[in-house]
Length: 245
Image 1 (cartoon, helix red, strand yellow):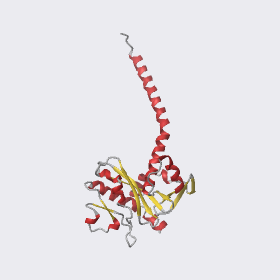
Image 2 (tube, rainbow, N blue to C red):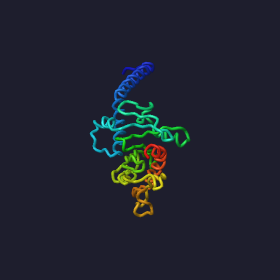
Image 3 (cartoon, one colour):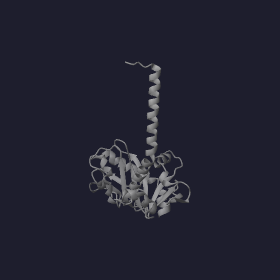
Image 4 (tube, one colour):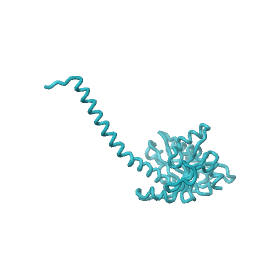
């Protein structure tokens, strides 16, 4: 049996590791454009879903989004500081699609200046991202508001780790449909968000215009949705007040 020196084994293993690392790096770099495309497509599908566009061919999603959307960026006063459509900036130089909205929300919480993304679909539905915390991890999604600045026309919620059949139901059509037509401002134009009611709206004293049913058996996740909507939508109140009304 042939014996190899420690030096030989060390060099052999080092070369092998370098070869494997190089091959993996090449594979990752070649796959990245496809991964980025799939990530962008999934985000667009959620935005369009909140605005009421369902069942769109995946290959047509990005083209449709480019045709029917204006990407707006607003500051904390609700003023539009950037506008992007079909590959062109008509105002400013910040694309809403590229904004890390979670980071901007944290800036808002910390009292720093921030920029918020808004996706205007056909100039009559305004879709905004929301982020929150469920029972087991983060929850997020998009809320579409009509051009009256008050009425929710659709939602698209998602999660990574909520319990299937319980908290995981936030991404179901049944739960999300409960927010359609709800108002986020009361009759005196005060922001009230939409309360998520444990036990159901019909069994509470809440005005059904401003409330939706919680998920049965998923109290923590439902509360997370309630907090998420109130916290995130409130940041857009200046925009709804100044731009849409």
